[in-house]
Length: 249
Length: 219
Image: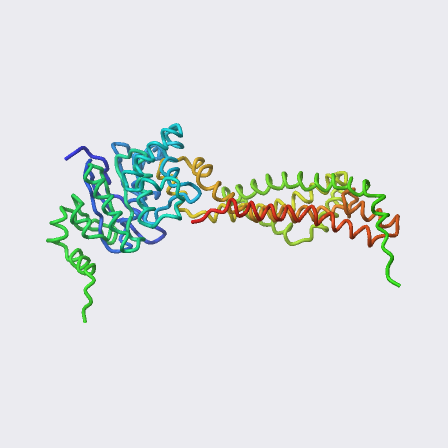
């Protein structure tokens, strides 16, 4: 196993009276692809947002590449550079062309010259299969294409970890595959990824590890085979059964 | 017998009349400049410091729920009673600025808050500072949404400067009234003045429409 990229220790988080995370502990090593599954509202997305500081935790500790990000003086902008994030609803910048969406991070945050950032952006767009779409506006692309731009945008910062927050949940079914293929390619190239997803086949085929979330806790953690084929917890079994779309009389 | 039109009177006094445009334009440009600054400042203060919100609401609602004409006269006639005396031109600037500031602050606020939080999160996730998110992500989108209402405020303001005639600012309408009284030809004079406003305002209205289309962001 590679070195630790992310270490989450006993994290609690609540919104008003609703406790979302109840003592989550998780360590991710370089090169791991962790699929996080579990029912809606179980705290999966909130956990991702705590990892890059978009949400503040109530107690516990999070380290990213050794930086203690939950201490008061943590330099979040600097830490976030190394953590890519891909959102459920893409969140592309609608006032920028596709290529600029990808280049704006390096230009604004890393102060890269425009020509260099655009060159990088073109290479990354090519890598996610969007060569030729550089000058399009985001709205001109399909959802699947937009999400691949969002992946290229995250890659442009050369992150050591990418968080995917239900990246295919907002897509039409026929567009899901192109995004999953792009993500599989990233995984194959050794990118460390945490993917909150309902795509069990993706978890099965691409993830090196599957984590089952329920009611703000990790209830099962293991290889895809362990968690998806031979789940030990009843909650995991019930959840997986519900995903099979079997209509019973 | 019909009315005998005598436009010769207008023609003879055209230089006097048109000289008023200087103040009309000056009132528009100067109070829009101040109004934009005031409106943006108020909007940002309101978003950043929720605690001063009540004071801002009182200001905004006072100026949005009373007639501009009343505000003008009040500032010109009442402020001297507490030792603040401005000449008519600057009284008009003050009234127009305060009135515009109230409306514009609401336009700015609505424009900024209409940008979804996801945009801010996407910027922060790239490692941008909050200032960079504002400058690169939120404000450019907000400005595009604000420009159409801003442009119609501009056109409205250009015409509303005529209210400054009530406190003897020698702009276009004031001069029209002076001439009308002197020459007993109000019909001709006001017709021509209306035409002047139309000729000047219509292109501005078209221009604002064109700009609005130009900057529209599709999503």
